[in-house]
Image (tube, rainbow, N blue to C red):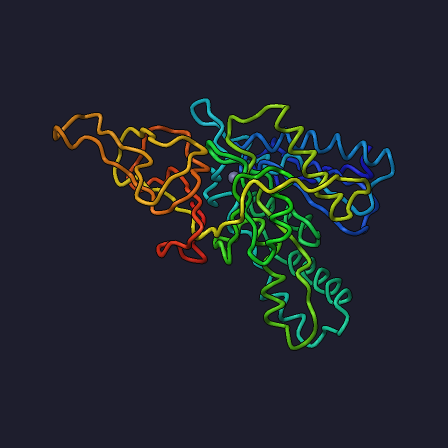
Length: 381
Ligand SMILES: [Zn+2]
């Protein structure tokens, strides 16, 4: 049994309707380190729901055996709003039908408000500074006035995670190999987690932009550290990562059991759970910069025909896919080759096979930063 299970009620979006979040907690409230997980913030990304199911079973066992040292908070279904969005028989959970945009963008950046209250209050004790900053972050978030259901959902999720030591946002891509997004400041954590998960790509960024959930949790720490450096030591006290659990159709117990076990081993390595995780597996990849990911874009509408498989290696200048004009004219110019600007691994691509002009359809993880990829604008819509 969890230490507690709480239902948190979101503002009713229409008379006669009510949506809730289920929040499970393991370990003693307030114990450290604290880990936070949620799944399917993009509600049509189902692999995380099955991983969370197996994660909860593992935590049940650890709790029964008295092995939970810190605290673990799990929101197994992070986005009941998105899960209710169907159109033409399909679940569409990436963008809010209520027009607030992408569910994983626009989380509040608490840095500026926290900084105002922290000036002149730090001491020479790093642990005391971390506790102070966590308290201030919780306070400034709680003071944010929100009315719309999606905004309240974002505030609630961030409120559960903002004071965690480790934050795991479980997503997936269209068709993909398992990969991670994390900050360059937290390379070691990202590399170890990637090794345990067998990640094919670990993408490190300086500033992704758009304020996704992981950035909202972790970035106040390095922004505050930079601003408050003369006043006292402020460690980076939150490792937050977006874990992309392969593709949307990769929903099976075999992968989900292995992924949940890997996440639990990482918690053991970080002292959240007791027990022997075994030796760290050899990483499958070196981390690469997020600004080295070539996001291939379709110049026109067309039928998308891949020339490279998912998981294939691509050299810069190689043709990754062709766009076919099904109208067939002018004759001879009906296929447009799309080339990669990066040399690297083709690790993710969209599921549809018909493009619109400007549509981003495929990602290749290269080692070298690409000139068109700019900090602050590194994520797709
Ligand atoms: Zn996602």
